Length: 99
Image (cartoon, rainbow, N blue to C red; front, side, top):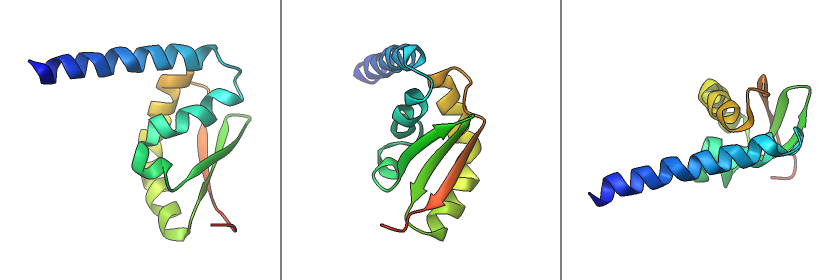
């Protein structure tokens, strides 16, 4: 019973967040949606730094992270577009020189 209630709450919260992100200026929404799309563990180790012409730029620590995230990019794109309204065409993972 509690598990089902928590799932319903999560679904409702996701709808509220997606609605808010879809109303935001196009440049801000994908960057703000990145932590939701990738989850807390990945969000703690990456940073969405820009969004231009349908491309979200995400900083990563090293080539290993970049390779792993590129493999998962289709899942992240689907989640981002669910939150932002099909505006993100590609995610570019860039190795950060400061990390």
